[in-house]
Amino acid sequence: MLREQLFNSEHFVVRRISGEASFSVGGGSVPTVLVNIDGSGTIESAGVEYVLEKGGVMLLPAILGVCDYTPLGKSTLLEIALPATS
Image (cartoon, rainbow, N blue to C red; front, side, top):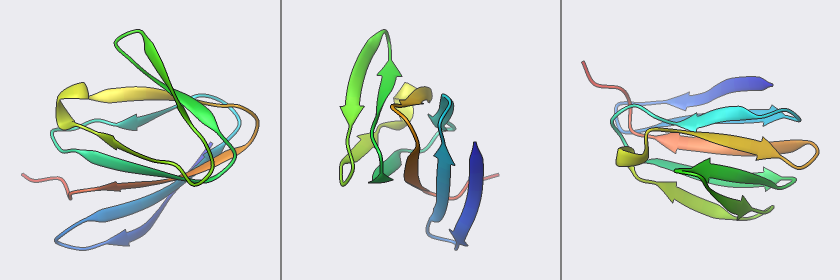
């Protein structure tokens, strides 16, 4: 799994995450937007799986916390969130 920070401003942070094995998305105390730019996979939260296909967009509310993303083959996501606050 490769996690790269592409952009970081006072308003939002953009990371690109690529991999073939499961990885964590979302978390912290802020909502997160996921954009699938290649491949497909599933996101699990509270025992329920949601499919995220290429071109798909999903909002993860902050209350969900960290979720597991399981790629179906190689997959690349953009993870967009508010910056961490101190």
